[in-house]
Image 1 (cartoon, helix red, strand yellow):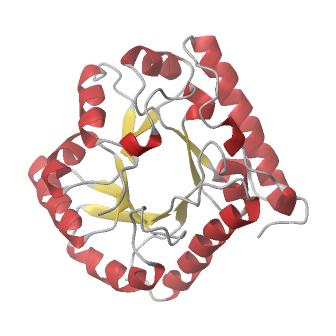
Image 2 (cartoon, helix red, strand yellow):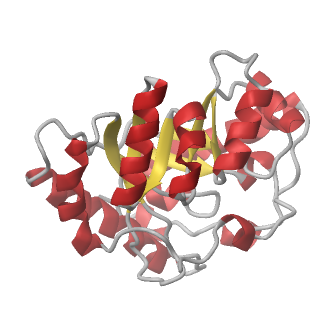
Length: 266
């Protein structure tokens, strides 16, 4: 999918932990505009319409005041890793009636009720036990939920997600859970300054999606690809991302380590 120009795109991983903190509405407007400009440029390199890419601001660890400033700057959906944190912020900001929440981190079955209650979207589905728990709680709540199936494209044992070879069989089981609306696939790329190794993860997800579409259950939508974060979303867009999960480039560096929010798979 990428052009010759696109193949030269570097990561921004050298900025990890160094992004300046945003606190005012103007800070957020500036940062969002900067990210959107990069999204537009990446789309132009790949011959894509910028409207085909959704920016998901990731607000994990950030206090309510920052989220309210980001909301005032135009954000209407936030991504959170931890279900407890998403639920707490949802309760605290329930006055913002058009604000939606996406849970993008690993989910244990005992936290499914939190996601079923507060989230519009769950991007890390990789277990039938979690699918069943979510479906049960959603039925109780009278709600449905957009979901992305998480795929491990880097081969790292520290990352959650299905092995690509497991995806087809997993998708065949999902129509049994009527409250879950499958929208596509999600991945976390290798965290590396070597852009081509990062790009390979995104290519792997896109090519897997294209294969899965051929035999997907009737009515299952696999149009969405959620891939790319602050350091690599431009490369992800060049390879077909329709959702990019951008945190630090909008909110600023986090005080907590990534290990606190991306715990190793066990």
